[in-house]
Length: 251
Length: 78
Image (tube, rainbow over all chains, first blue to last red; front, side, top):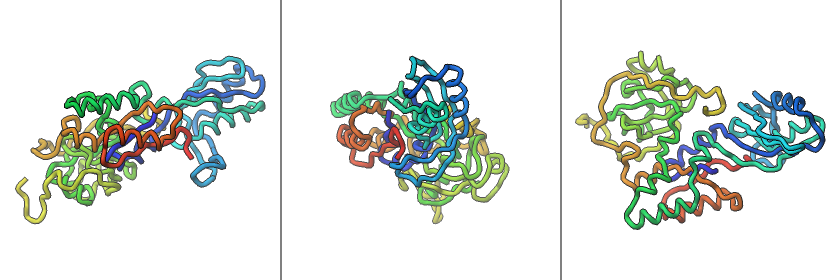
C-alpha cells in the first residue's frame, strides 16, 4: 500500500513518511536453524538496532539506530520464515533480514515483502486504482459520494498527531506565517511536547499549519502570553479566514 | 499503536478557553468537493509492478486533479 496526498495535504507528507511501518515478509535461511535458536535471534533484533544503509541508498551511509517495535514469527516451513515486523520509519527490512541470518551463522535473505501499514494507513482499508477510477467517474456523473469514501481528509489520517486548537480570530495570522501565540489558543492535546511536531487546527478541526511547540501543554494552559509554537509549514490558504489585524476586529 | 512506541499520541484535549466556531471554514468532512480533494489523502492498494512515481501519476490522471500529488515512501527506503 502507498499513502498518496493531494494538493495542500502534500505539505504534510513529512509527517506521514516519518510514521512507523508494518511489514510482512519472508526470510529465507541459507542453512538449518532450530526453532528456539531462531526465536532468540528475533528477540535480539527487537528494540533499538544498528543499521548501515545499503550501498545503493539515497542517504548518507552512516551507522544509525532504528527501533524495531515488534518482530513476530508468523509461520515457518523449513528454511522459509514468515515474519511480521513493526518498525520505525527508515528501517531497512532487507538489511534486517540479512542481519538475522548473519547472527544465526547460516546467512539469510529476504524473499518477499509486503507493507501492511504505513503509520495510520492500514492495508485492509486501502483502495485500488480501479475503485478510484469508478469513484472519479461517478463524480463526473454528478455523484461525489464514492469519491468522498475513497479519499479521506488529511485531518482524519493524522488524528494521532497532538494538536493546538486555535480560536477563529487567530487563524488568519498563522495562515499568513505568524507563530501560534498563547492568547489565540482555545485547547491543546495532552500529549503535546516541546520540540515535537504538532498541528495547529481550527475549532472546526481544519489543519492550519504544521508547528513545533515551544511550550508543554500545561504551560500553554497556564500562560497568559508568549509563543506557544513556532511555524514549521503552513497548510491552509491565506484567505479562508478573515484577518483581524489592522483594526479589523469585527470577527 | 503508532510505532515507534515513544510516540505519545494526542491524548485528551485540554480546554484553555471555551470558544464556538464562527461562520468561516468547513469541518473536514463538510468541505465542498473541490476543496475536499485539496486536503485529501488516499490509502492506495499499490499494484506491485509499476513504481510509486508512476502510480502517483496515474492517480493524478484518474482524478483529473490539477494540483500537486505526492506519495509517501517506497517499500524499501533509498
